[in-house]
Image 1 (cartoon, rainbow, N blue to C red):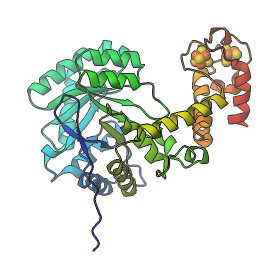
Image 2 (cartoon, rainbow, N blue to C red):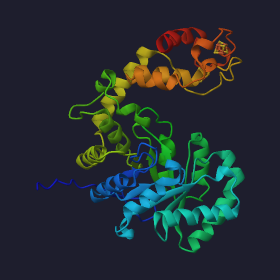
Image 3 (tube, protein in one colour):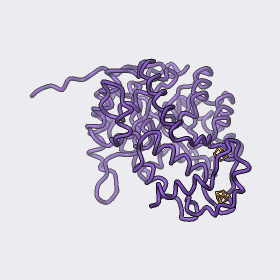
Image 4 (cartoon, rainbow, N blue to C red):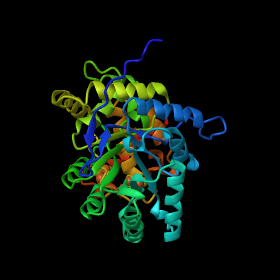
Length: 374
Ligand code: SF4
Ligand code: SF4
């Protein structure tokens, strides 16, 4: 039988933890499922093991993923692999207002499902400033004890909060790692990532292909590809890993071919060259100028008395045209309730006075209505 050539997947030090992690991480949130919606444990095990044999050593899971089956699937898949060669990350949603007893129960359950005596990185999931103030003391108390008992090696957080709040979490000194979203479309955490690096945190990026948006092969997106890169998903992954302060890019892989392509992308080239990034930025800037909708997403125009989601709508419109992915953006736009869409704008102009960019909001809403809703 012909042996498959296995490319080398490089490792990098994960902040100041001393752990060596693969730059591609396995996100266990899109595992193969059966018709009834439950995880197909055999196929999931095969998939994860395939990734591990190709050099992936970082696995991210959560007791929420796949209705609690993700941790179990990971546990079954890693049976027989030397534990010290794997880095496991899982999370707890402290915003559920758990008692201390429940926190311990969840941790014990995670250990049991994962079939391990310790978790490398235990995260407080989707941390916001509000949750930090309310629940972080308990998270610190539980994790402190768990670390002393050897059940957890390090603690961290994942977050979608504003960059200034994420910076507060980093500066608190409580965490060794963070997981945040960063990609070609959404670069708002760039400085936050730099700060995390400066403070010695391990940085994991979720959504490198923007929830699949950058994985499509629409013509406008294809025209962004530098020479030698044939697929937008590969461009997206390389872009993320071009940032030397990002240690791991998580990919929620569901098929063997996705693992193969991602491993090939990352092993053949760590990232884009400075020239390629420069070219890409020029192209994007040119498209932004053509689009001429300088919304910064500041939200000063809100609330609209008619509930129109102004910054969200402008964002989808910009994504559609700057990145050349109108169908993807339309799909996201159409998830809005009818009263939140551009067509609900009555033209009252209350928002306009508050917009520092002086965008003629009602006119643009009309334009967007015919673009997305017609
Ligand atoms: S002009 Fe439209 S978007 Fe602005 S506040 Fe009025 S209804 Fe809302
Ligand atoms: S105030 Fe202007 S720039 Fe800010 S989110 Fe609203 S439309 Fe965009």
